[in-house]
Amino acid sequence: MTLQLKRDATPIKMRNYGRIVQNMIAYASTLEDRQERDSLELYIAQCMRQRNLVWNRDQEAGMARVKEDIIRLSEGKLTCTSPAFEQLLSQPNAQSVNPQKKKRK
Image (cartoon, rainbow, N blue to C red):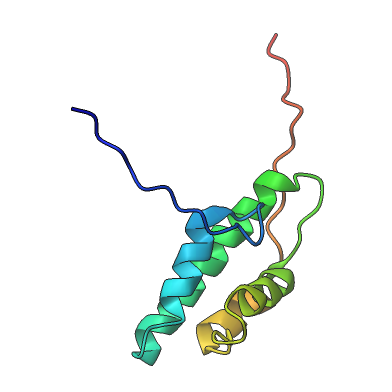
């Protein structure tokens, strides 16, 4: 007896974020509770920022880009206008990790 898993065949809209982020945004856009949706938006934005650092080591895309991408992926259902999200936007960008490590003597 073999177990067959159903494969999700929907196309990934932005490959650099992946299907999981896309599914989280789709779920967040269905939430009715504003506080829960805002906290999930913030968590998704932080995940997207980390994914951007993985794909773009040399340059930080910034939270403004992440906000635009969330709005685009949610088709305008998520607006990212909570005070906590605005505070995250005002923070300076995280420095990318230097890929060259110092050699030990």
